[in-house]
Image (cartoon, rainbow, N blue to C red):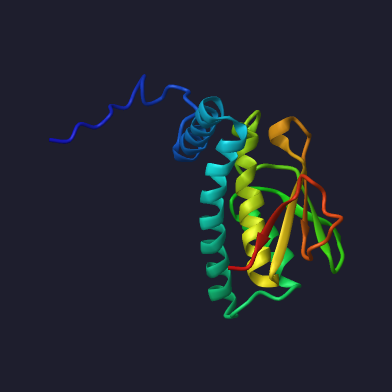
Length: 176
C-alpha cells in the first residue's frame, strides 16, 4: 500500500528542500564530519580520491562527445569552464599562457553549502588536475582564493608544465 502526502498544510509549507539542496547539504555535512573527525588534511585527501575518479569519468565523457582521443591544449580551458557551467558554477578564464591557465569563479556549484568546508575544494582541484594532466601530461593546481574560505570568489591556477617555481600550495597531477 502506498501512502501519498496530502495536499494542504504540510505539502504547502515553505520548506527550501529538494534533491539538489538535499545532496549539497549531505556533502556539506559529510565533509564537516570528516574535517572534525580526521582533520582537514585527511578529509581533503578522502575527497581528492572521489575528485580524481570523477575527473577521469568527466574527461572520458568530453573526449567521447568531442570524438577525440585526447583534448587539445585549446580544448582544456573550454572543457573546464563548461563542466563547471553544467553543474551551476561560474568559472571563467582570467589569464592564459602556454604554461598556465588562471580561472576566476563567482559561484560555487555547492552554493552556500561550501562555506567553511575547504575540503570540498578538492573536487575542483582534482577534477581540473586530472583532466589537465591526462591531456597534457602534467598539471599542478593552486587554489589561491576560495569561496569556502570566505573569499568573494575563487581564483584557481592550473599549471601545465613542471617547474621548480610552482607555489608550495599547488597540488601536482600526472598522466595515468
